[in-house]
Amino acid sequence: MNPAISQFIPADYEGQPVGLIAGKGYYPTLIRQRFRDAGIPLRLISMEGETDDALVESFPPEERAAIKVGQLGKMLKHLKKLECQFALMAGQVTPKRLFHGLHPDLKALAILNSLKVRNAETIFGAIASEIEQIGIQMLDARACLDDQIATPGLMTPGKLKVPAEFLEHGIRIAEGAADLDIGQGCVVRKGTVLAVEAYEGTDPMLQRAGSFKTDGLIFVKTVKQKQDYRFDIPIFGPRTLEVMHANSIQTAALKAGSVILLDKFALIKEATQLGIEIYGF
Image 1: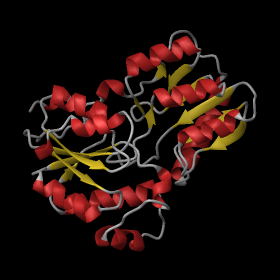
Image 2: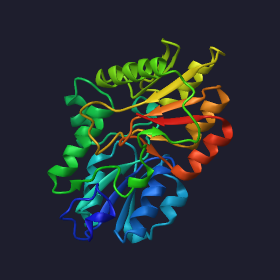
Image 3: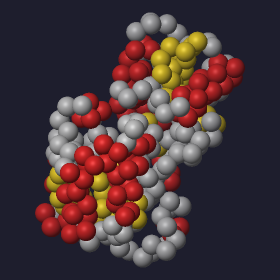
């Protein structure tokens, strides 16, 4: 295997099967496409009620397994049975599942009971650690998506419309919130914080900000200073773009090198048509 395929693939990778632990959305499907194009063998761990049916059906039965959200012990057994030596988490799990619809097995209950703080980092970090304890290496969730990551500067055509001072204010707020484990994004307007992302996710935050029915809104998406790239990678996709447009948010500032733009070329083209500027900082 040539590590030049992706800077996020370990240099010592030699073609072993990778277990794709897939949540909802297009992200896991894009991972499947990119890994297959690169000749990397994939196995699928799907989650009932979350993983797209089309993605599940794209794997032969002997290369996939299904679990309910919370069945950590079963996940570990399937990863071993499918002979995975690496694993990658991709796709969201519906946030409310933590409170309703969770099916924790004994392994998951032990982890949840050990956590004094429950957020994406602690929960998924604990899951990643359990996977690595059985000898399966977690991959960076940006693997094979090098060309889909936000780059520095304006990614849409033209000149940046939003004043630099307001943009810098939004970046400062988002980075502070991320480091406090509140969330990865915020919406600001002319030095005022309108909304901060918490457990509900990006799109509900954008809708709350849009309810003010005002102009000059800036959406900022970032990561923690010590981000764990094995999970919880910030995603900017078509759905978020639609919600921005519906709520008159015309600027998105994304952390360069960290935020993934799903189907980046098409996304930037669509943003340009909608009059939305996308900037990497």
